Image (cartoon, rainbow, N blue to C red; front, top):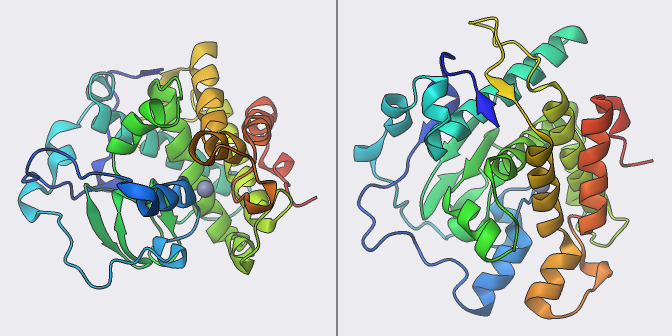
Length: 296
Ligand SMILES: [Zn+2]
């Protein structure tokens, strides 16, 4: 995965509210079974944390204003994205939104952009106060993606993904898939309270995986508005394998096996490892969002 060294990163698409005064490093995530359940429920969930019953009940956010604008200062060029993880996320957000902007324009519509909020520990959102334990998510109420970079370590250590830069890109692109669903009015289908392999919740999640694949297909050919050149210049087969591996690692069956020791499809909210891989790959193979009809 390679970014154009000379690309100008648009840091206005990322709000950096990571705390610079966290004693002893990151917050403990998933402490005890409650945390574990929260983590499992929340991972890559398309709905704000409020619906998961994880609202912090009015606690103050830990985010410190003193650290604001970190990525503003550090992430200016594609070369920064090739060397720093947070700048890579900025570049991925730019690339994903470049694609959806152009796709909407091609279809005669206008894309409404969504910022990504990089936080640590806890963050206030229109969907309630969220902690890192819920994993990355999209909040339809404020149309923002929320991400604690610490999740990417857990993707490897807790979920057994191979990791790799594109695994991170897949996660970001998946969350923007939920934004597309929000714009199209399909996201609310997930909120009927049902779970299970054929539930609307699973179908919405698989569609977001498919949309992530659609972006990946076009990522290296979609020019940035301002420079006329793609931000992302190279995606290899190994990158795509990292994406597929991450999609499998967060499959409901894998997570259930790992954390509860048995698979209960009736509780699925995101789809199996095989389904998630299949739909990411369908989007990638066809590059056509019309092929992402997981409600068929
Ligand atoms: Zn999701």
